[in-house]
Length: 404
Image 1 (cartoon, rainbow, N blue to C red):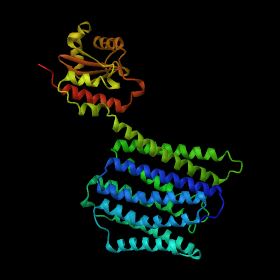
Image 2 (cartoon, one colour):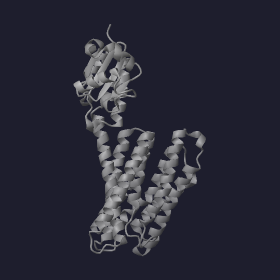
Image 3 (cartoon, rainbow, N blue to C red):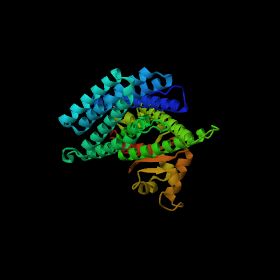
Image 4 (cartoon, rainbow, N blue to C red):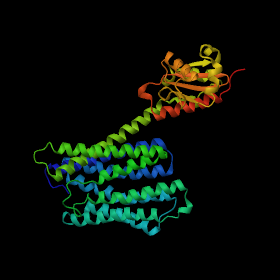
């Protein structure tokens, strides 16, 4: 309950919970955009919606000092285990034991009634029962996930469930901090922060293995940077202590995770509205190599591209180049001389060709007869994703028929 007065602890609790509500709302949008009609997505949205309402009501109640709104926020809190069980059933594609479903439903209903009609003298007992109910709910879901019949699920599904089970266990300590009856001396409540960490992990797990590794690395960097920023900001205060440092770190980490979710989701939305070069080629109606190259020229990455056939390279000794290009697909100027001596005549001619057109890449579409695409990739676009796109575009162009 609210102790009265806007202390630094109350302010920190409010900010962390408001960040949690915003972050979960963004995660709901991201999941719905990925799979708007999926049955598991609907279950996740129910669970995230319950948690987002809980964090929003708590954040507003603690900031405004509203004891009544704080009490009402216990209603969505009581429904969290039921929401977690709904998601668990969807992931396992199996019904949970009937007894567990009855306990989750009855417990949510009784505890909700208790927060509405319960007397102030029973507030501590109610908070204790609610906290134990939440912990038991998450522990039960983790148990259902870890004791599943693995043979009924795909290997990729089993790996995802293992990660989710670990997440369910890891979030329990964060939930404990939300209840003063259990940890009365905690400087800041971290339940919303735990939820932000879980949804961030869920969104990262939705990509490929390389994307997951990159996502984990970037998230770890964000967490470390936010923690250091929070600790540095706390030192500005003249009466800094360990509790104040923890509050500042919690605020900074929650804010950074929320902003990260917002920017990542917005970037993905913008990218979906403007197709990339591979999407443009895949959706193209072009049937010849010339037509595809003409469409590629409309993309910023290929606006400098020029095509050179064998007749256009008379001054560069095509017979000499033909043998050199036979075993290569894409030449990058920083990698010259491409595994041979720099004095090799073919290397000298290709370097001269690239210098003449300020090019960074030569894409070999064919070596006999010679057919090259020469282009300059801007420094800000030179990354592994661009190199992959160039290699795939080369394969598409090389396999496209030439007019007779």
